[in-house]
Amino acid sequence: MVHTGDKNVVKDISDVMISPRIEMMVIDGTVLNKARELFFRLFDKRMSFTDATTMAVMQQEYIRKIITFDSHFKGMFGVLGG
Image (cartoon, rainbow, N blue to C red; front, side, top):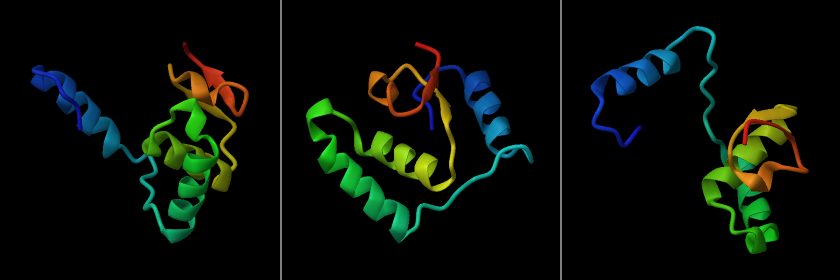
């Protein structure tokens, strides 16, 4: 989950994850295949497979904005943050 020595931070994140306002999603074969396609298509941008999976989910769910400091989301989605 989080690499931190602060148990309170881990608890806060855990509480957010179980909030009824948060929708947890299972990554199915369709999203996984799209993530793989994005990962190889955008390989030169040094994107992680996790980021490619995030992009695939965003595309599938029509999510247009993301809060992130990862620069490879810029130009593809509205970025809130760094």
